[in-house]
Image (cartoon, rainbow, N blue to C red; front, side):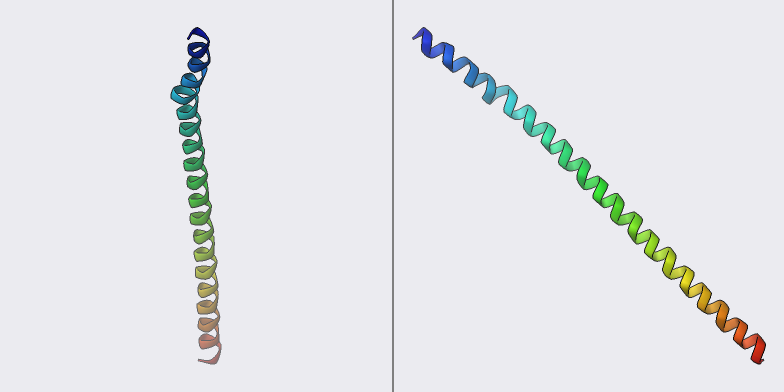
Length: 71
């Protein structure tokens, strides 16, 4: 009986302590990775928007120059 209890205690420690701690840490890492991906996607979208606005502004400036020259 004592041998059975001595082998059962480490199993209980693993099941009740180590597994939840590892799961909690893993969940935190996944959340942090998701936040990083979301941040990168937002920055990429902002860059694309800024580039598109810059191109549209350049086109408008070109049109204005053409109107002034031909007008």
